Image (cartoon, rainbow, N blue to C red; front, top):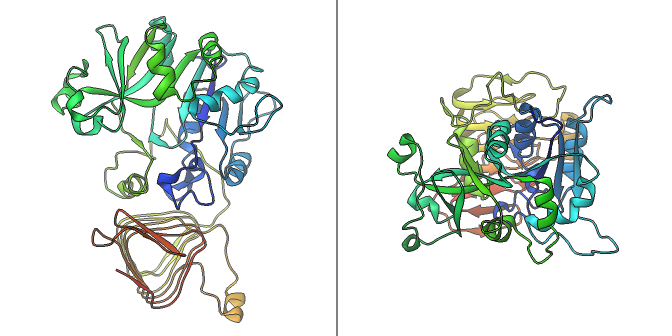
Length: 421
């Protein structure tokens, strides 16, 4: 509907410290999710499903793997104007600074964006899990004669303290914006919501970090170099001078900002009725096409297990576990409430035997619970990794413990009989 009128700008986020150590070697949008995807695939797929096919992805930290993923995944016909390009922070004669915030990232990238014709800029986050038809939001933006539209989601009083909260009038115009208000300042910040949301106590409109800007308005706002963030500065300051509207969204949406939220979003996908559905025919999630063989499973008791392509599994038991591509799990191993990201390549068993190297994957007899195993990890035989609230936060050479979750680092080697519990 708005294919030739919209340019999408996907924000890759900063250093991603809250997702550390998963962001130790990669940017946030490049973090693997659901066994075979990357986080950036979510907003890109939402755009494609909305027939918005011109996209920039803005990033500056550890962008090599993201560049590689996008180059190998999103290749459109030469006979269309469609593209997905990465814009990494770059020094110029006029500016030698890194991105200082979300708005500053867009400001520094505007010279690339303005080479394209568009009426509306759709600004998205690269680390959220949701399915949305952006045409609905853009249509509302046009019908309201808005200059800025903010995607909002109704939240409860308890959740409201972690978001930017907006107060709207009867027409949907945003009249007040408060960034992460404490509980004692929430009075009067509630907005009109649907009866279903009201019944659930979700009466506060939180910013989703999704924005539609008229082109001329965005260009004008970017002239003020003192403003570096959309949520903290651009939106609150624009309320008095511009027509700023809320576009409420009542579907599933989660911000993958922390290790625990990332873990829960993945484990939820192993349940019978997950909140996010990868199996919708008319809303596919796109990712890199790999020529991998089907997975093989031998004598394994599975309940709530999601198995990606190219796996070889001899495990005794898998429960509420996400198994990533090319994973190997040895005999009598048990995985429960575990996210195993898989491997980037297959190994030659003869070479492993000759060099006496622990194979990538999980070794025989190992027990893994409440853990995240990053890509290319090597877990030896009879290892016990039992996460839980009984564990204190700590950081070691091969693993990190956060909020009771044990995160085994990228390419880490865990020797036989090692114990964390």
